[in-house]
Length: 309
Length: 309
Image 1 (cartoon, one colour):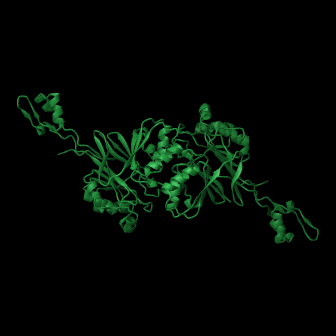
Image 2: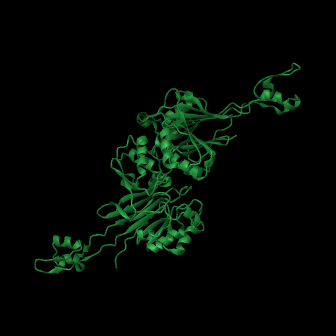
Image 3: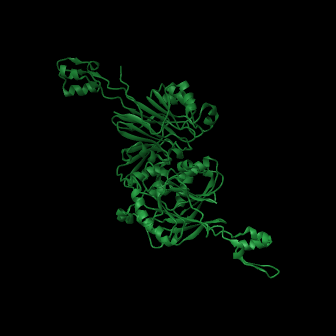
């Protein structure tokens, strides 16, 4: 079951020739989530080979244009491609009037519905879930209302050892109980101890997205133990003052968060256009958190399955 | 005095990996006009090496998203770059509420003014002019209100032959009169015949932009004699029926227009995403009008000075 993250754009407010504004696709079990929707994201989606029609959930962190202005073209293209199924946008309440205005002017021929779920929370909160996946939103520390997101697999059902099914002649009822983690008491009085019959197939994986934000004490707590953390690193530490004034993070801030949260890996994005090469940003982060990498548009980052010992 | 046209995007409604939606820069005497403003045009402007701050006039043909959705990011970037001087957008009346809504949500920190000149005409009409340049709008034949534009040099002042200034001891007053095309009568009764003293430095150049439109009888008349004609060619002639239904042109339609208008050169753009290579489109146009070319994003097309014989 695939779990992977593909950045489409990792620029900050000013895009460059090679760096588009924020937009990313997360594939969790072949369900494709779009995270932020900066200008040009429809061209980047096409370039990366994703299907427009498979994206049904869009998560917008905040109402700054570099995270949002691609949604107009994306929804229009979905309409032109004959989309019929709903799209749901998880975004702050302020998105509603922007969406209404857009639909009023450009949505007359749309044959699909666009739902808006207003994100509002002061602590991590589940905003979307399926049987196997859940998405949590949590507040960030930016100039305007802004949210981060955690996408994670729910704890899986336990697997029953195949040889036990045969050796103990397990019934379907017994297997179902065991998969749920329960012991089974047979009519004969025999007790099937769950841990002797089952194992955890995998440890649930998780990905967190933190952009845009200044560092704050609770953030590592919110993203504790994620396998992959995407964290903005708009500036290097020599511009810490500017980062603070604009409510952004430095590469050091991002790395400190990853270290403190005990994340598996850190991806750095939302880089200021002033950095022509990203080496300084990367070095700065790696000194604090060696498992750091610069997010490269179009590259697929696997959130690896961690097999239990 | 430079006069050149640089396409930034020549896709039709659905952009492709290599083809952005409609946007183009016209340089007339180092004054930079943006013609249409499709999504991603700010990235394309940067890539082509134009300065955001030198663009002060934007011409929008019609209110379809693929000609417009780049304006949000462009104006935001201009603001972030510290722009102080006005931007004027020439666009149909319907642009006003879109602009107002945009400014309400995203324009709070803008330090420059955005003027909207509502284009409305049923025949060619001057909508912008300087001492040396004029821009005319004219109606096109699309599904919604849509305008084409002609950008042209005004007839230049006549130049006075340098050797005549010396040989006839011309005064400043006499030179000024001659430059205006007038004869001069000296106090002595001597008449300085204008044609003997002056020459036309160049024939005024012109560029016309026709996108989106179905063909119509008056169009060649509107763009008669332009040096360079950009004309949409969304389809090839085998899809003529589809072109008619959607109020677009085929490559043949574009070429017929160029031929009938006696244009100097034809650039074909707004190509449907269904054409993977552009050879069929080009061949179809060249059979009717050999001076046809596919508009290539990032390439600068010079509108050459034609020296009089």
